[in-house]
Image 1 (spheres, rainbow, N blue to C red):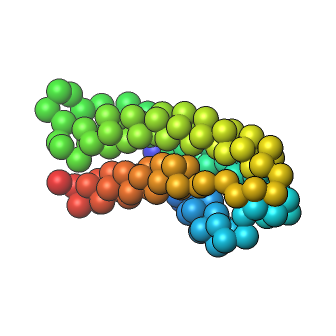
Image 2: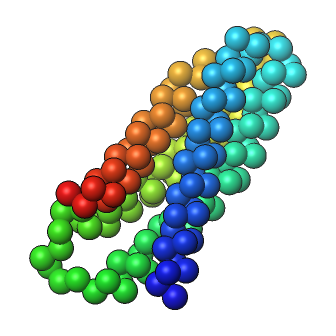
Length: 146
């Protein structure tokens, strides 16, 4: 069962990072075309579709991570990498889901109500980028077992 949970954990991580990367790349490519109704609609659909992948994937990472930590059963003398994974990873997941969901909804509202005007994406794309860097940082610390 432990091996299957590691598989689910990594699969969720790949899905989460992939969806965030998909949002980032697609929005950067659409940035110059935003302002037309079609481009705004496509940007809104992109946020919605990739959000439907990112949020369940992040929850899968959280639940499988909790299971894995409980199965390891280490006491108070946990190594740093495990503490970073447990506390930092859990916090990043919860904040990531909340911030990307709230900002994604706001972006969708702005994009749908903008009609033919340009919408600024910098705050949303910055938030997605920050969470991607944080996720990869936790993966690095855990991989190196610092």
